[in-house]
Image (cartoon, rainbow over all chains, first blue to last red; front, side, top):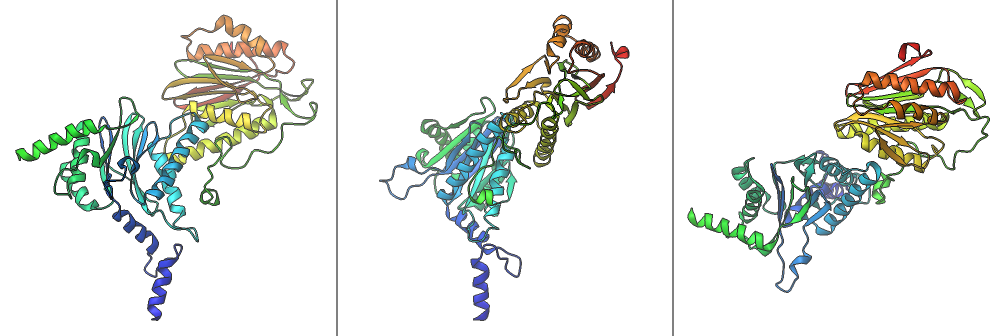
Amino acid sequence: MQGQSQQQAYDRGITIFSPDGRLYQVEYAREAVKRGTASVGLRTPDGVVLAANRRVSSPLMERSSVEKIHKADDHVGVASAGHVADARQLVDLARRRAQGEQLRYGQQIGVETLTRSITDHIQEYTQTGGARPFGVALLVGGIEDGEPKLFETDPSGTDYEWQAAAIGGNRDVIQGYLEDNYHDELDVDGGIELAVSALSEPEDEVVAAEEVDVATITTDDETFSSVSVDRLESIIEEIDQEEMDE
Amino acid sequence: MSNWTQGTDPSPYEPELGSLPNGSQTGDEDTVNKTGTTTIGIATDEGVVIATDMRASLGGRFVSNKNVQKVEQIHPTAALTLVGSVGGAQSFIRTLRSEVDLYEARRGEGMNIEALATLAGNFARGGPFRAINPILGGVDDEGSHVYSIDPAGGVMEDDYTVTGSGMQLAYGLLEQEYTEDLSLEDAKSIAARAIKSAVERDTGSGNGVFLAEITDEGVEIQGHNAFDALL
């Protein structure tokens, strides 16, 4: 009994380490990320691709209201997995930070600098009494000094840089697919194809165009843009074709 | 930390460390040290030259110091001149230096000159530094830059610029002598001659010249009590 009540104490206080040095609330927050549908990000020499599974729980729901990919600034996009409402708070922070950089220095914020300010914020919620950590992971992608960049944030406030990464449910399966199929000579269309294939990997068939949300930020215009359903349909057709050939 | 958890962003118009004192620059004209001053910045393909005179005065009527260095390094490849209130300018320089160092330490790369000029303009506008009118000169990946920063926070880039009480005298010479293809050495000589013109006739300027040479290698500053060797 004694042991159990102690165990519970470690697990309730976010600011309390367990005797073996773990922060249970942060680990639970990572579990919350796994419960979310997956998002994928990858960089190619010509730009960054962000893709998210936007599944709806009822055919009556407007699919466009499921937002998992957000524009943070002209040159930066954010994909999320986990608690959508938590993600929105972080995206808003990122937007304010990006504009703050314009006010302070008259310049676009770097993708790494922006990611750091998000993770600094997340970290504070692992150390502040009475608060709860963010139950969301983000992929922050954009162009910095003409180069595509991709970072991940996790609920502990750590950031990682990636060539290609998956977050959310079935992450391991999708990440494995990316590891097998990613190469650094992809063009942007190839990147979109790979991202959609990767999101489809845990499923029985390739996801439908309207079930995914895809955005790119290319080095050409350094501008966030959503990929239209028409373009996605033709890319998915190609994937289907390739799978039939195999 | 409390800053963040309350959801407020740091002000883009204020320094990260320290704060801007309240109120405008007040004080008796006759008791505040001012650099009446002539300061010049010239951008060339090889780098930037900054030249300043060496006089501080009280109300422009009494020479309170004859050996003032009015150009200071504020960045690995940029320097700023002190024009106006000496206290305001010195505090401005300390603030910018710490901002530049913080930026570099956090991001692993230095601030470029445009960012530095924007930041300096924000601080000049928002703060107690109002009674200043410095020149910012620096070199970055884009090349050589010279900016003038006015007391209201106006930031203007130019190929060459002059601020201070002797500005008309110095501009007179620069308008005749400046060309786009100046070498760094030629620019130094022209800047020294322009300071000499001001030193001869402007009561707020005098006592010699400091020259700063800024290239992608860094900033070198030297003082000269006499002009002869420079002209």
